[in-house]
Image (cartoon, rainbow, N blue to C red):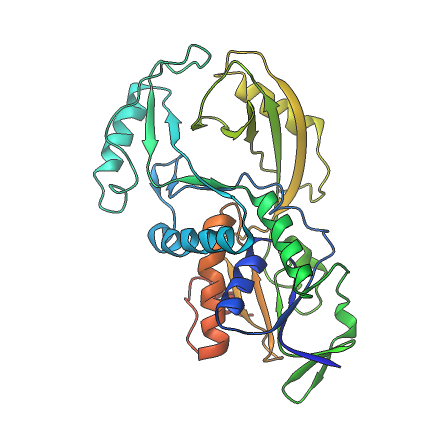
Length: 348
């Protein structure tokens, strides 16, 4: 029977970030993933420190970016890939009033680092933006699909990945160890995203789930190297391709793309993009969202070596490295979790 320090279930952004903590501290681990959860794979991948609907700071934005950017850089270096692309994000204004709200927000200490005070005029004839744009600073895009694909290859090469469904009913407990089939581990971390709904140990955590759908369009005449945020995001990904998204559906919990969402996205993007384009891809996934918009991290109430790492919502690229480090310190150093992310806030 092989023994490792950690068993991890799931291989999305949360799991990748936690594996990086384990690698950095020379811990042994094994990851189980059956590719049933798609939210990390279909994510737009933006790291954006500003909530652009309300012109307010993202929760712990500075702390998250300070952890996230070095982590993705390390992965790029170790795996010899490119996944992190610094990217200008321009918020399209729809009125003079929105311009004024932007400049008011830029004076706030928490936002002055992230909001440019220079109005960006529209010079692209294929974009309808008579009131111009506000520019978000220190933003970018992570190619989450490439990241996870390459990271899984890396895990396989190091015999650290099992492409099979984890069977919760097979877990056994012996003294301070977890027994699972032919493996022993000191700790078991569930990073299953919305799949945690099928986990008997954490099925009661208040994960609501929000389905998101994204289109990829080919627009040769658009020619922009920055992201636009209007009623939807338009994000350049190279080769005249742009991701357009996303939708929010709290009822449908499937990973199947829908015509309804496609129609919604097309109507919105055509309201400010004037050139012709074609849809070349349409994907969907259920985000692991929480009612208070904070992650779900912590220890099982009965089994001391079972943990959950979940609830990253719509900002997994930024949040994952932060919560992964918090959980690692909690397990290994017995450091208290940030109360805002601890599942105990829900009496679990």
